[in-house]
Image (cartoon, rainbow, N blue to C red; front, side, top):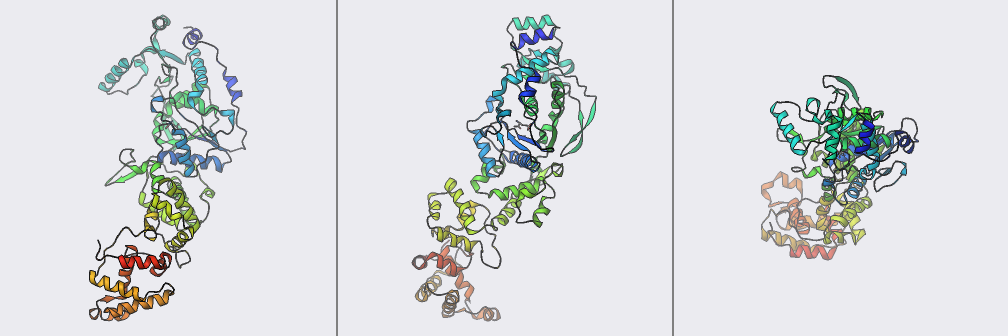
Length: 547
Ligand code: GLU
């Protein structure tokens, strides 16, 4: 068979040589040991936790080694393309502190551009042509129906499905048959002519999983589709080589394709990058553990964390906790350190399923938010409110001084111990709502309506905005005593039958009247922040009892 003539017939025209591309995309000028990593998503518009998981690992491995991380868009499958998807990837990952050094819509060192696979058609064709010339690729004229029939036959015979061995019909077409099909204008794809034998197994060192056993590939995978667009397998091998990727971090779902990739790299004459396949994020669902699912688990989408207002650093800390088994211990020792200082290592990544637990993330979030100053918290909340908050919530930021007092109080700043009541921006904004509007009655009074009314009006008659905390509390005690509630807790505990309740019950009535809630930070401070007029308005209008 004249492979050269066939290659010219299938992909006419002259294409640059391997040498040309080797020079066009030279080895990167980086210090020894510097890693080049990449995130290579398809632009489907759905960015998920798995992407973030890989991206943080990519970013850490690259930057800790003085290397670079780039963003490549694998858009060979146009059916799945969504407008704005690339910007969405960048902004979603930026939010979590993953910044690319170069790539699609980012720019950077143009030597390795373009970063959209659709714009790299020529290079894929050049290498497909080269493989055909070398007899390592051939045209396949099988139709969808032929392939479906083949799959059905293989399934029936309980055999591995695919285009391989004796099933690779077009692999053995004669020159005459090929040209006859071409002359008849039959559409074709280009397939790799695999040289592998599935009887052969070999050891492969995975950067995360350690040594794994790999079976040689024998599938004649498609490398160019009938429209001349490459498949993922083919395009990514060429790109990882010419973008000079040193280590590929990706989900373990890709482990099954590794034999194909190894054979492709060999056929193309490229050295293999190193690979690290990380485990999937799992969720505990009752008794079983399953992979997070797009359909069932809103928390799989990164959009969820933006909308809920998760603090980016908290998500990053949690991801690092899951990514490196020794991160948690390191972070306990260095709670105030920048998580980027942690010596991240691919080999410390977990080898088997990682359990993702939203409760654990919430705990980390509480902890991280409790480290912020009131000013930092205000900035964080404002960022969220501008994007996702209601008009009423946006108004909280008009009086910055008041907001800072609210946050100082609610976060326990200046107190003995910081409070950890805030989990996310949306939750924190709901939490502080009562400082700005008296709309929701969260908790009901535990005393009857008449008592509520008389306690409130008695308190209002003695209330003075100028009172300090101590004087204020003395007055609450007086009101309590006047209504048969024990002013002194010790006295109450010694003789609970002798009273209608204690000063704590009276304070609770005031608290619910002022805030709608039975549990709040210090009530005197709340009243100071609300201002005299607002306190009087709320206590006067507090309808009782209220559900
Ligand atoms: N485009 C593939 C994906 O979206 C990338 C796989 C890889 O990282 O090699 O999953």
